[in-house]
Image 1 (tube, rainbow, N blue to C red):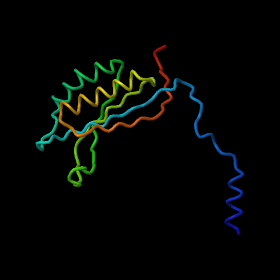
Image 2 (tube, rainbow, N blue to C red):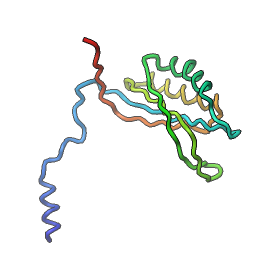
Image 3 (cartoon, rainbow, N blue to C red):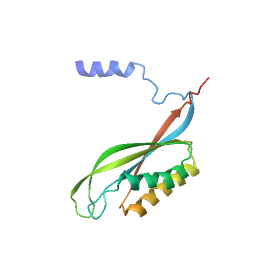
Length: 135
């Protein structure tokens, strides 16, 4: 009985808003996870990755993006075996819409084709963006 009363009292407490108003611009933050493992057991080199950045990423997202090293773990769908590999996370914050969607798809397709990857993982979430610029 006591637990029921506590639960009932909790239901009467004010609930914070699930989504706050965005004081900036409502954009999207997307991340592509680019595995560096190759079919032959090798790895995408730093030079190969830099070439991809220069000729693909910069062209698709000239206003900017962030890259950081990551370590991925996943299960190979064909063999069922676990795979650990170095990866690169490509993060871009962009206005929502078809232009960015198409650019992200072109980047993923280009990476898959160039480095014979089975897939590139994408995650996206809403982002409230404010640019603080020099006064």
